Image (cartoon, rainbow, N blue to C red; front, side, top):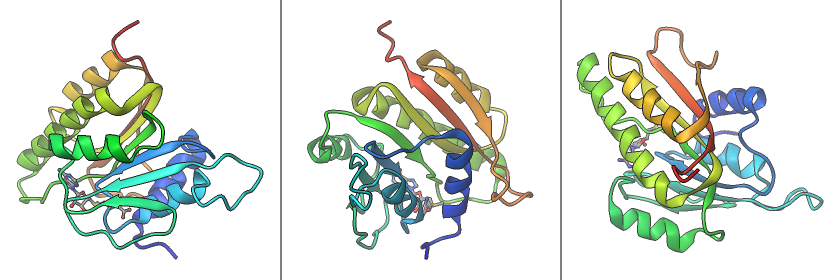
Length: 192
Ligand code: SAM
């Protein structure tokens, strides 16, 4: 039983694009109510349910309260763009860096499509700043955005930082919704 239907979007994207696997460390940004974290806990084997596979780690962050979930660590009522949150994440990560950053974050929608689009693109761009400190080389980011005129800014930035950037729209995402995801793999950290 998933906490939210959004679980099916992540399941679908992961089945097709192989984002999660046992042993990986995942940061789930905008995790409330926790459905993506539920999927991540299963797929990275965070509870060690499969004794023959490596055990992964899931850390969820949200501005809202997130109810506890076995196998995940949550930072509730925290803003991912706040440096204090970055410190907390670094303290809690068992490995030095995360393998995967998931973001299903969405700002409170104003209903003004262009404005909402811009707000979400800015949020994704600040997530990229955060990833410079916590994403391991060759790591992955999956982030939601609402389509619009500034999407190319985010895409260009991702293409500077990652070797493989794809635009994906899961079937499970309502057809009329403008939400789309960028999947960026092979983070290169700007050093090579
Ligand atoms: N993936 C979640 C799930 O499956 O349960 C649903 C996420 S919901 C669509 C978007 C979430 O992003 C909201 O709970 C919202 O509070 C959170 N959010 C928006 N801006 C945020 C920020 N700056 N920091 C942390 N969370 C944020």
